[in-house]
Image 1 (cartoon, rainbow, N blue to C red):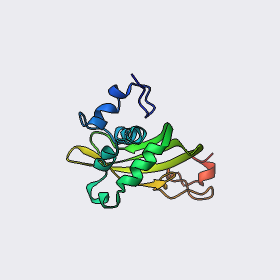
Image 2: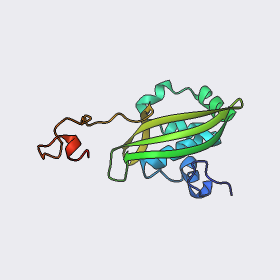
Image 3: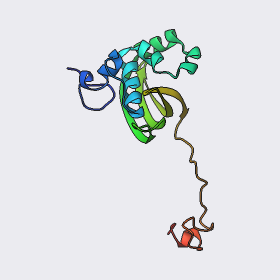
Length: 159
């Protein structure tokens, strides 16, 4: 049995394989992201298209995707962070680093992807290169502490 390309340490047949074959749906946004990496690694181009949010499939280039998938050696996946994306969520974010080699040169793709769940099924919606921007404003050292103490951040929670 071959190891799953997603880096879980489990065999492909017991990890992403059932998702790629259509025997099971990924239960979380992270599971979908991992299975999409495995799809690139194994050349499962149909799966990559089917797991795109339907309204975003218009610009999917099957030939280019198949070429990239087939001419690259997929060398590793690191999941850095997840936000939501569980059984009770309708949206989730997964930050990951995908490593691959093309024409003898190593590449790193760092992305934070957004996933949407519809009718119990997760889809890749879009992504941003790198880390998702923070949603809360940054607190400066001399700003009032957000805990409500009335002291400066640097003398309170920032110490």
